[in-house]
Image (cartoon, rainbow, N blue to C red; front, top):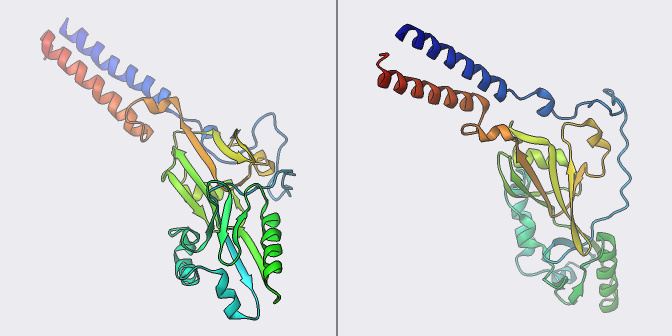
Length: 281
């Protein structure tokens, strides 16, 4: 009888371990980026992929930070438009920006829109810029300057980097800043740390701000068609959220081997206690 129980115990360990192994396996189709998924038109290597036509252009929102530069032959005149220390903060912080946005230089040197969408510029006062595109905002600042100063002053206005928030199955979740005028979804993924192997890469949610509201979009990182998607480029204030696969609920979920090892350890412990209490050992 004891021999039969022992054989049954060994078989149980192998059977349950095999089931855990099968359940823990994650197909490469759920892990690899940019695949030619079945049902989609195949995109070959070296094939030219035009960007998607996007009829929406980002408009400035309250609490945005913008970078405004002024150019004039009169250097003393330029100082009138800057807060004390802004220039030195911009120059001193560029080293951090070159290292992947380690320092948000524009937080210290840029111009912040308040809760009502106004930005305060020395000598020009409060200007309403929320709801305008970058070019429209630049033109408005230019018009204000032309009213006050006879000397020619050129204005350059742009968003102070692309700010986005990464949540969920990323190596480094949190708010990030990409010091570029344009950034792809993979730039954002690289800055947030490549997603966990147990993340649902086919269900990346993008929470995007629009003029007067917000929309939730879903993209598939496994799909090569993403390169032609209107969501291939991230926008300022995007929120990226990656959900975990259901398999993450098994064990600690940090990786497959850890989950399998934990499952085997639990089964072994249960069988050992059963053997002691039943007199097998």
